[in-house]
Structures are given as structure tokens and as C-alpha cells.
Image (cartoon, rainbow, N blue to C red; front, side, top):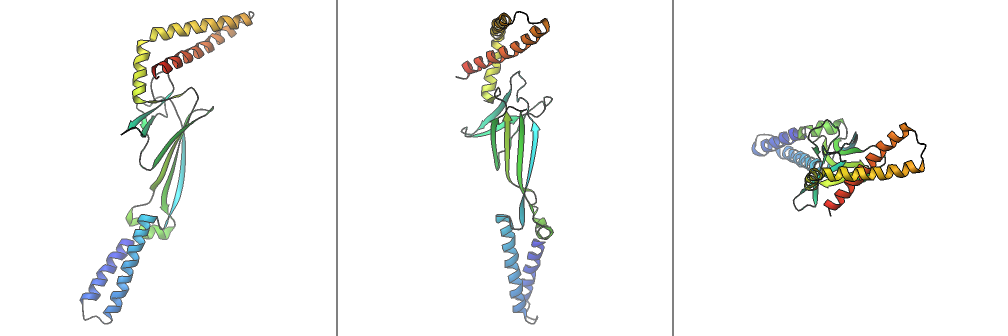
Length: 234
């Protein structure tokens, strides 16, 4: 409606200025001019300073899974330009084939460590019409739901790795070339630790031994992979 009023006021101003037969045309022209100035100011205030708008905040939390398909919990990022800006690539479902990319415009991305299940929380602040009158005047500008700021907050566990896409590609090659080495080192660690635990508790039942072996295998694999990652990314 603001644009409509501005157009009508402009037309009336032109009519009152040009047509000499209208009585008191200078007064009407002055009023039309005042409306033109007023509507122009209101439109500029709305567009530049969010006049007539309020901020609406929405928050969405979704589970987070590894960005890669490897048996390694990772959060990937891709560097832009000189590397100071990053786009993070993340997945929220194991069935998801390609990771999603974080937005860049008016966006902040951060991550922190947690002992709970990994998640990604997306908080969006958007400008919406303050009331029905604001909607009536400014809806023609199509600026409802305009983004003010977006924040991605990744909550990951301590055993996760935050890697660039180049680092992830490099690790993939290293893992492929060192499968036998990883398996040998993992088996050796499991044997050593299992022997110590069994020596400390020689009466351990068969069921507990099986559960312990499974636990030790997972721990040993994580340690072997972690050591290999440290060596690769030095």
C-alpha cells in the first residue's frame, strides 16, 4: 500500500501543479508533495532501518552424524578464498548421500564439544511485520521473513575430528594404503590389554570375556586411527 499511496500522491502532485483550472491547486499540490515525502521516508526507513518490523527467532535442533562415509566421526569444512571463511559440510541422517553446506550470508558457524548425542542447532532471526498495519503498508515490498542472522551450532563428541575436505581426502588415501598396518596394530593392542585384564581377573566368565573383547577392539581401533591421523596431519 505504501507504493500505491506514493504513486497516487505523485500523480496528484503533477495534476495540481500542471492544471491551472483547479481552485486552491497550490494547497492541494503542497499536501500531495507532503504525502510523497512522507511515504518516501517511510519506505526508506522500512528498507534500511526495519521500521514497522520486529525480530522473530526460530531454533531447530537435529541429530548430527559423520560427514564422511568412513568409520570415522568427522565434521568437514571447505575453505573459501584465502581460507579465513569456511563452509561446513554436515549430515543429519546416515541415509543422506551428500552432506549439506552451511550458508554464508549473514551467518555464524561454531562448534563445541559435548558428552551427549551430537546435534546441530540452527538459529534464525528474521524480520516480520510488527502488526497488521505494518503488513498492510509494507507487504507490497515483499520483505517479510527477511533474514537478519543465522547461527549454526555443532555439538560434537571429543572423539570427533573437524577436518578440511583436503585433509579428509588425504586420510582416505592413507587408510586405504595402511589397512594391514591398522589391523595389525589394533590386534596387538587388544591382545596386550585383554591379557592384562584377564590376569587381573582370571575367573572372568566367558560372556564377560566376549563383551570385554568387543569393548577393547573398539578402543584399540579408535586409538590406532587417532595415532595415524596425528602422524598424517602433522
